[in-house]
Length: 541
Image 1 (cartoon, one colour):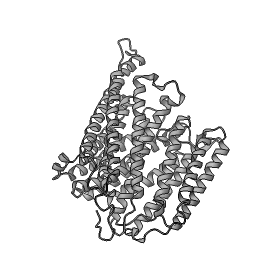
Image 2: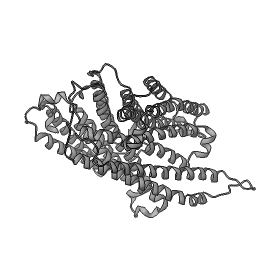
Image 3: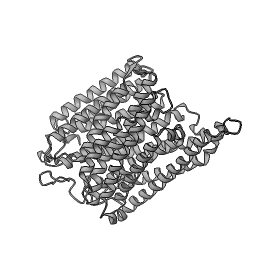
């Protein structure tokens, strides 16, 4: 893969690798006994490995010019494999977290394995590692196919992919060492945040450069969603991650905001991370792979554009619904609630547009498990967005907030929407870019679908019931006007639901392992079609 870089790109890659090694050395030396030193050592080792890898082919001949007539799929391949590896790891950690709710002693007496440390490992691993790598890989694929052009250069995709995964490794290992800002979906410390900004700017520039050199005049709607994901996530991250390090030789920092302002900025970021990371990017994925797999055009292209602008505008205002009944001004809470209800319109427009696209192709949904993944994803996207708008209403929030209903809601979105559409996209693209006629085993795809669906339903129904039970127990009063149940009694009542949660998670993880195995066997198989298709005769897909 490195030999496919031009000599100029190899030279620049060597300089970047040396720069990374130098930064790692400085961090390791300055950090001394601080956890930052461990992360510096990781960067140093990675930089040296890349120096030797690039240096070994530095003087190799220039790559074949004919490659410019083909799509550049090598980073996509690596991104898909990394995404599946992170997915298995993160969901296994999630199963461990679920086990702790039933068997609290499963930490084995180790500080690094406590709930407070491994829970963000799970959330970061599923959303940002599994989901993020899937978004990066599929965005490279969709952008090239819909623009009928090759990526603008060959080095930037690798910088984005390697740099982003270095950030993820810093994040999850930092949590286990106790390095965290204690912000939901924004736990990594200041130096990891700065590194992510650099990587993200390169990603944005690469995307814009590739769009600018497109051979297809129209910018397909999927690219609009991917671009919104890239731009808005950068804006959210920069503002919410603003912090002052205690020392540049240590990991600890303090946020730039405090009190209710910090809470508002955090949930402006937090809910928009859901909006533009977990929604917008994956809608871009859905709007490309669903019609391609169904062999049907989008039901209403105009509706896809209208829902894009509705989602982009409305979502930015809804974060305050996480702060009902707090010190946040009442009018701000009401604003968030109002926009949350209005958000249901563009959200259901997207879900309905996807399902209506399948009209005339239901026989394919019946027979093709890959298409079924995307159909279930569209259904759960509609359900999750309705549930989110419903839970944002202040009286409903009084019952649901701080309960496991919220956890069930998040997982109906993360597993039912994010993971399902990702599986459908991967099963669509893997045979294509690896030059296979089909997946290694259609039966394993079926097994994966039914295990994932069974695990998903078991999980979310368990937590929906748990959350409503908690909310009702916490607000039940006796004749004397005091609480009828103690908090401990509500915890004891959760045990059967938490066991159901564990079973559901185990089923979903089993499906994940089956899917990862199937993808690996497909990759390892013998190519039976052209591994790539030339750009020139390729119509826009």
